[in-house]
Length: 132
Image 1: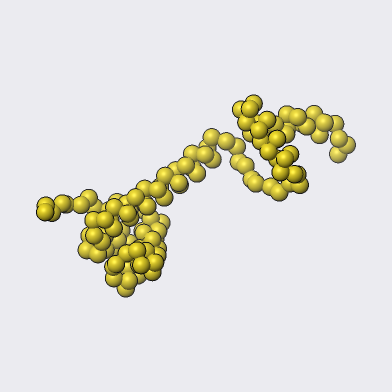
Image 2: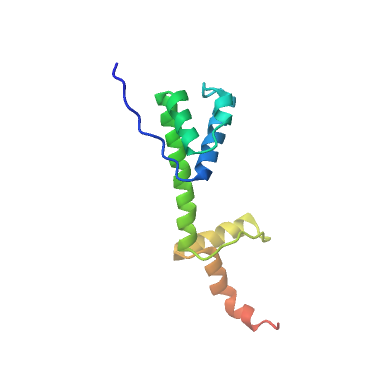
């Protein structure tokens, strides 16, 4: 059996250190990780995280942590890039039947626009004519 040298854990900021600590504690509590709970509670910075990663985690556990961290980064990147591509959108509650909602969504999708754009293009002129 060869002894592989593992890559050091690369945490980019204090939020990732906090996230790693919470992930490790959750894995220990859930019985999916056999590591020292007290040592995990003392992860405060990137250096502590690296020590814990090197000393407490087995190769399979390191792989799971890296995979979870990578997925987290991808979700954050996706949210950030999605916000840059479209105007600020806030979900609002509106009264409509499920059939009306599905119809609205289907028509908007077929035209390649958002439901907001469909509503504004359909009712925008009428709205502008309403007394204010």
